[in-house]
Image (cartoon, rainbow, N blue to C red; front, side):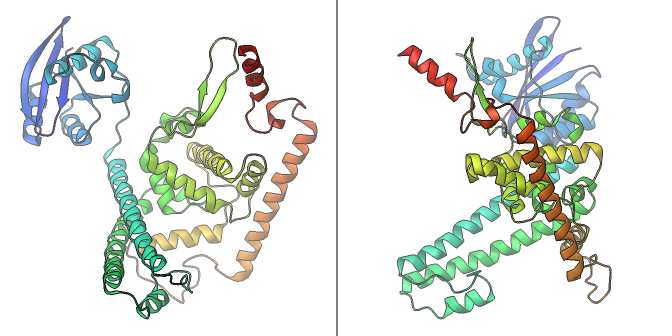
Length: 420
């Protein structure tokens, strides 16, 4: 077995080979598909290639694995021997990768399959376009604020009624040009987001896990697709706690000696897009009756709305792990609402509308929706009653559950007095 270190750059890759306790440089190749295929054909079946996670890594891995080469993608955050080295060149970095690979000291990161990579690129692109559209809308609102114009009398200032109202405004020439330019940019970005939504909808219809997550009230296709694109195969997480840590929703911990542990803000490790979408879903959950809304209200009463939203995001991650590992839909799902979501996916993917045909999008009658809302309210009331009974009989009187704010506040105050 030989260890092949590959230091990847935009135009070339530096190669190093570790064999029988020795490391040698093996030259450079171009970072192109043909050169990588030639490298793969020159390797022996037992050889292993190591490279850092960087731009183009997914494509390199797919080319090498297609020729039967085992590839190890190293976690760049834990490669201090490269990032903090006093002498740092491409040849030395490639040699260090090969040496660490043969010693078994490389922290390998998971590489997604092609379907997950495609969905990840689509959701990442969509988030960037939505952020750009939000900036343009804020610029248009700034034009109204600078000219002391009242707030729009409609909910959506850029919808049909809102644009009719904007067209009647009397603005200076420069401000009018700015507003018209913003409207043109919004139209263009709407078209781009719509094209991506169509592709994401097609992928979601072929991914049962995405549709299963959509059975949770407040979770739309964008949240479910972004979550699956970031996580991929749920079976690689043996517990929900590991999944929470992977997404960066676990608190930072500082502890040494006999001092109690101090918990700070969330670590924010992993994909920021998934955390952002989960945060939006957490706020949407508060608008629908159910146990999740009762959980949000319970945490908000003690810690405030922002911490409650973060805690609800973490609760959603734990719920998603159980739904996917057990292959079950949400127990408190609303079937008519879920079927309506799936029908919206089909229409977004290009399915022909079937207006007037009963049962296509589920039973959308008012009586059915009211019955489902009543069941959701009962589930929320049952959760509140369960927590009330648990507080009356279960937790200790002096535990962290009844401490307002930080659980180790008294211990920290004692330490500060001792230090004084």
